[in-house]
Image (cartoon, rainbow, N blue to C red; front, side):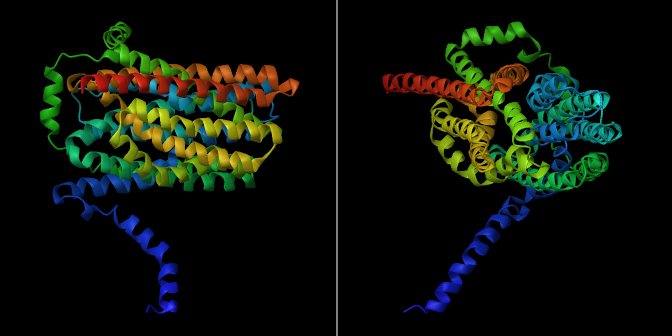
Length: 456
């Protein structure tokens, strides 16, 4: 017989044991010895680097812009709505610059190049503190945030070369997942801090942004000690090679899509599905700041903190599914998470419920978790090994295109419908577009399964 008191105590300590087991999985000793030093340095740097990104994370910055600049000199309702759409779009629009950074880093030391871009990002974020709360400051924050997102895109683009050389394929996905988890948790914690500090005074961004930038510089100092294995050999190979990337050549992108109709169809449905997702951000910020009049913390919880906090919990579940199926099959299931998020947003807007918006944040976090994995790995199911970067280039570029237009379309719809009391219809349109995208993935799934059955 088990002692009931001991059993009860064991059940109480179970969450602590699970938390300790989760934390210990991040320790360098969990990896082969030859990987531990670089992994430890890089992981520690990602404890600090994402802190500065909280300042320019699309959801967080849209709330700051929407509230801090509302009613300020030289800021009209139209210009404010357009600025919210722009800062929401900036992270995705910045993806179109990835090939610029890829070309500029060619034949250069990768860690030093990444370090320089991290410093540039921190400086641009710090400069936002100098902007006044007026029309000129609103324009300045849009410019500086856009430039900071572009330089950070360079960090993400070039970082893949470091991972490819420093970590073997068998460990790479595990390590990338840990980095993504740390980034999400730090961003969520930093988002909470930003919301609480901004609620004290809307001028606090002038103190907060330089502080966040300093954390980024601290992370940069740690990251700069990372060593790239085979760095000289890689630089020599890049200088000798004359191979270009399809992303710098629009004609090359068209040729690739014509040569692979299945991938072209997948990109078409991704364009529609992703368009609906990217339309959703600005209307949420408009409703939260202009209709529900939430404080900074409430708005940032919906737009950033809750989705980011949910991601680490959902990533392992989506990873198991993606390991077992084609990315089209994955999207046919995963897409419903974003449909649910859009539906919650529609209901929250109609009923003016902040709690329904919180539920939408949970659904969005589940969707982001799966989207992060499919974004980085999904094209592998289509691309030959020698054309992996070309297929990814097409995906990134098209994401940047929809990242430009989708928020602008949402802004135009909101400006047209909201004054008439129909802001809920904007959310409903986003939901409808998402549903059509998922139906497209389901149609493709049937086609792929028929093809596999024919081969067998």
